[in-house]
Length: 243
Image 1: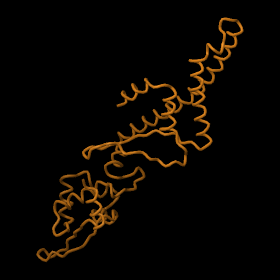
Image 2 (image 1 turned 90 degrees about the vertical axis):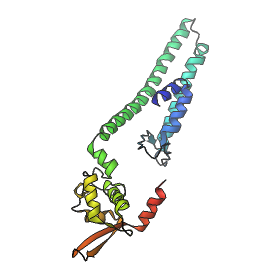
Image 3 (image 1 turned 30 degrees about the horizontal axis):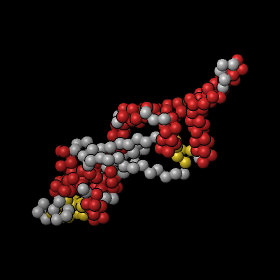
Image 4 (image 1 turned 180 degrees about the vertical axis):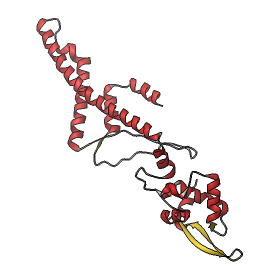
């Protein structure tokens, strides 16, 4: 895809490229981000990276004006330079040389600005690629654990495992917690309460606030059992999200 974009850009005029840059990548600081979701299938995990330069109103106006100046200068040099200067005369050559020197200074200034943007973008990409290889990123993406230790319970691996166990072992809308946790330990040994800063699966259920819980006395064994189920509003939400 990147190669196709490069090939397409090579065929466009400078004015068109500057228009694409200002429309897609220059934004006012108070503008809302309206990124569209990429086309994807349900079996794939997508990560989208988007580059934007946010500027206040005066900076945005100055930057777009400077880029327009660059396009106008390019057009002047390519289409009107020989009309403007009589290079067959000595004075004409002197004037043309001075104009080219001044044009170079202008072009070089724009080049340094654009190069700074690209260098910042490449560093951000490099830093993101390095971060995506870390266990911290895996915990954030897969388990909902942020670098500061806070947990997005709805996106957490622990809650997913409890829901999977619920779908397998539910009895009259409730699931025995011991049955669920035994299955989780066997099928997902990396998922445990300590990973989420909890001392037990009961604490996970309490902290996540995604489930209801109740104690039932087992008359045959003479002991209490803990059962859980997804909160009704959460279950309804999950069904709506299912394809």
